Amino acid sequence: MRRALAGESVKVAFLGGSITQGSLSSTPQTCYAFLTYEWWEKAFPKAQISYWNAGIGGTTSHLGVGRVQEE
Image (cartoon, rainbow, N blue to C red):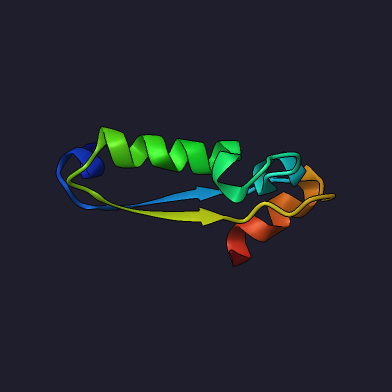
């Protein structure tokens, strides 16, 4: 948040399963990950916020742990 307040670039990334991916959302813009990204953009308008949603439906936390280093 300090970087965002200073107007620097911030990466907002999400790693998870189907809910992170946006399962049951009517559009990609209504999933919680994207809504959280939008909050960052509104809360820190001078920062350059980038968004990365790496949610993959049907995966477990064990797979997620392995993905952290690679992705």
